[in-house]
Image 1 (cartoon, rainbow, N blue to C red):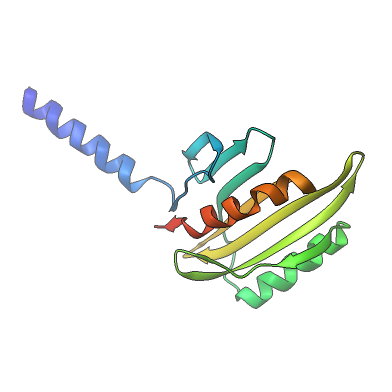
Image 2: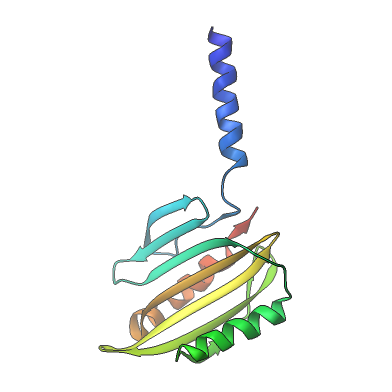
Length: 152
């Protein structure tokens, strides 16, 4: 009976390992994790409200990074976001597309960072957003955390 329980425990661990997410992410410095790699999403927030999220989405069809860059940039412009900056970021050694956009709201201007890289049949997407001043104060920590993401 004891051996059966041991085998069952090992089987459960193996199944959990196989079914874990397609990446491993850590929160940026001074951020608190509030959703730790549940499925294919990781979330963290800073004490001043800067949001950070890493998600993996199944791609319906594979396309080049040039296609994704153009499609994403066009979509954001159509939603009235203004591109502030392009980012040169790497995720697990892979060059990722990255942008910072701004958008106006009732309290001023917010910034929205997005970086993405294909990973097999999934697209890994990293997002961060906050009021301009708060975002800029945390930008270096966010970029460092993006560089530390490990793809599986």
